[in-house]
Image 1: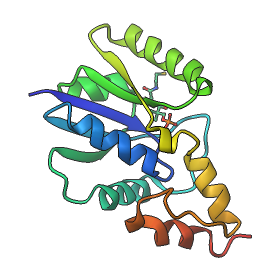
Image 2 (image 1 turned 135 degrees about the vertical axis):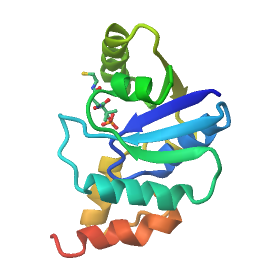
Image 3 (image 1 turned 180 degrees about the vertical axis):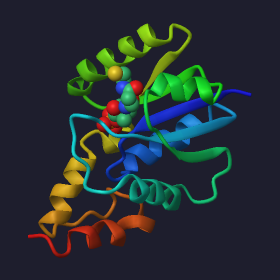
Image 4 (image 1 turned 90 degrees about the vertical axis):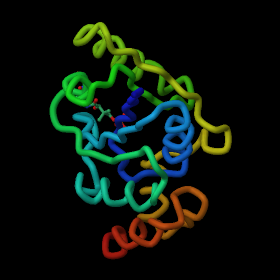
Length: 161
Ligand code: PNS
């Protein structure tokens, strides 16, 4: 049973994330999307909201679960019997942070491998921050987040301008 873990803050999930989720799920028996907090970023959506948005976006695709990530990712991976972390890469700007995280995780647990998947070129410009910036300023977010969660993302920003 090959279990991969795709961790992230997903604040909120974008079509770029969903694309990686579906492509990664096709390479393993079980994909766990682990929703954590990045100490460098304050989130707009609570962890429970981010989990619910992901679950709605993924729908009933089999072999994928969404779970909260509390504590260290390597401890989570061990608990789930997984040795593979999946991360998406867009531009060179992602590389330095991801490189550091992958090496830190390797120091914490030498059995764990981090595999990088290149973003779909369609979404190479896309980020959760860009989605929030647009939503906050009444911009269009069609095509940037899964259709099933679009209204919930827009609702979050309705009263804050
Ligand atoms: O989408 P992000 O912001 O890149 O996600 C970052 C996240 C949540 C995957 C990362 O901060 C993380 O792994 N947090 C758990 C704590 C941990 O293990 N940190 C890495 C070693 S210090």
